[in-house]
Figure: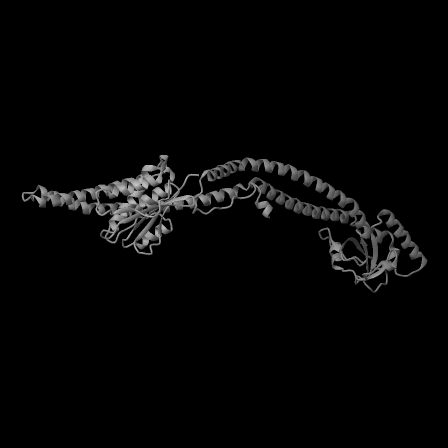
Length: 498
């Protein structure tokens, strides 16, 4: 059965048709054989219907049971005549109760001495043929027969008996089986074989025409499934073996429905995340914009402060404006980095020089220095990547560390080579990363899907999200490292060329 399930739909239909035709041919053959046998039996019994009555009328001496020579000679003459006419018949003399009184032949051949009289009475009453009765030879099968009642003799006190002639004895059955059945089976087999071949050929051609659209549909769905790039989290179903297009269509349909459901789920999740992102951005922008608006009102009102107070209000307004600018720029950069059409402008540059320049940029004008290079110099480290994006990632990491470092504690930046990677470590003495953010970085999960939320509202971790995305675009990672002295140590790992 597994072999049939692996075949094409046309082959399976053809196989089922062949089995049905074989079963039908076998049933029809058995039915025709039974009908033919009954017809043959009826014809034989009808042709020999008056045989027993003819014998009784022309050889009355066989009805007497005395064993004188004349009766024996008459019986022998009758047996010889009957054997010449039909060697398969057997003649018996029955008494009124159906018991065999004499057998016109060898007496030792009789094994069943009692013959059922009901079929004999039905025969004499003209019942529908064929009728079968007891076989005195002792066989289990009932036999066709001809029967006649003896005429009563003068002075006879007992009821007359019967002449009972079996028409299809064992000899005739053996000869008929060897001749007629062989021919019948040969003819039936030949006719069934020819009919089966013709019907199978016509059915196969018809099934092929009917299933050709199904085969084309299965091929199209299979090609479409192969053209789709499989997702890492999508369940992979085994392709059906053989040419079973029905199984291929079922498999493709199941895979397609799973993809549609997953796509719908992703779109719903992304829509929810987008709504949360917009609400968080509005929250983050509302606070500095409100403060900026208040400062501007203070500067433009009739009681506008002068001198140092005006400078303080103007400085606060500029700080809030810079906060809005930085937040909008980070949102724009993150949206651009997450786009599917982001293209890296790769070039060969010196990473150690880039790290030194980034540290120096944050140290300009600061007393004491708030950012410093730490660790042993690794020497020259060249990298293939997008210089501006990596510089932006470093700036975000240093800026994030500065905003969370307590007091005048400097932010330490170091560079080292670890196998086939260059690692930039940014360390601060702040309170450490929030638990959810640290877990996402440690598992290398996205910081933006879903977006991070701060306890005070709004979104957090935009700078780290940009750095993480830049590292992933270059085939690297952003991971937190243990900080025995407290604070936070972030490692930006980037692959070296070659």
